[in-house]
Image (cartoon, rainbow over all chains, first blue to last red; front, side, top):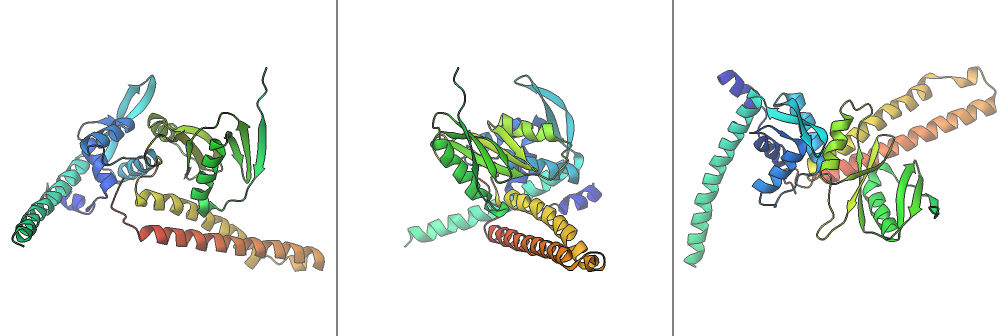
Length: 120
Length: 183
C-alpha cells in the first residue's frame, strides 16, 4: 500500500480540471458523461470544454491513472469508456484528503474572521 | 435550383493570433458568410443566413491514432467540426446567450496547445537552419543562384525565429494567469 501511495503522492497537487475528471471516473464513464458530471457536481459553476478534457484524458492515460474500459453506445455512436486504475484511486483519495484538510482550515479561519467583523 | 454563392478571402493570420482569427470568422458568419474550408491563408466562404456562430481553433500534433475519440468529444459537447488544415481543427457552435463557449476551459490546456505548436516550429526551424549552416552552394553554383538560395534560406530562418519568440511570449503571458482555476 505504501509503495502505491508514494507513487500517488508524486501526482499532487492536481489541477482543477484533472481533479474533476478523476472525481467523475469513480464510476466508469465516457467523455460526454464526464462533461455532464462536472456540470452536475459543480452546480453548473464549472464547465469542462472538450479540448481541455481531451488533453486531461490523454495525460491521465499516459500517467496510468485511468484506463480505457470498453465502449458504450451514445446516440447511436460507439464511445470509449474510461475508468480509474488502482493508482488513479490512490491519487484521488490522497488529493481529496489534502483538500479536506484545507477546507477544515478554511472553515476555521472564515469563522474567526466573521466573528471579528461582527465585533467591529 | 439555387446555386450556392461563394467567395474566397485572402487573409494573413499568424499562428499565435488564432483568437483574432476566431473573432473574424464569427463576424463573417454574422454577416452571412459561413466558412467552408480554410487553405492556408485562403478562406472559402459560402453565403447563407446571418447567424451568430462562435468559432474555435485547436492545434493537435500530426498522426492522431485516437482521432475518432478526439472528434467524438467535441461532437458530443455540441461542436461541429468544420474543417481541418495542417493539424489545425476548426470547430463551431451557435453562440447562445451568456459568454462565448470555449473548447479550452483552463489556462493549462490553452498553454499545452501553443506548446504543441511550438514543438512543430522548432522542428521546422531545425530543418531550415541545418542546411544554412552545413551547405555550401557557392561551391557548385554560379553566384546569382546561390545568392538567391542563401537569401531565401536566411529569410525563412529569421521568420521562424520570430514566430518562435512570439509564441513563447504568448505562452509566458498565459502562464502569468492562474493555471489552477477552471471555467
